[in-house]
Length: 125
View 1: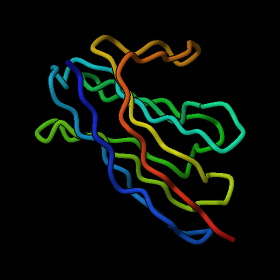
View 2: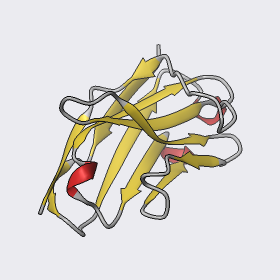
View 3: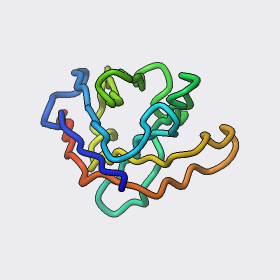
């Protein structure tokens, strides 16, 4: 059973940075598609980034391109989300998610079947 545990959220001022981590267990990490999603109060959940663990290819939402970087450490079964130049619009609950299959092409919606518990990110003015 795929289990995902996030860490690294917190509060930061606008312009600051945070790094989120997601460690997976119970599946073959290197054969999966892993992603980060976020949900702000009163808004729908949105995908932030995804990465193909076997290939290292990544995809980003337009709202975070150039500011966020998704990466992986296969030895640690961990995916990271480095978030720079944060703005209050980045505030929300961030979730790690994944599934043991190839990532969909960028133009398709990623619908993972396993989710972490979420970690809160709060960016103040």
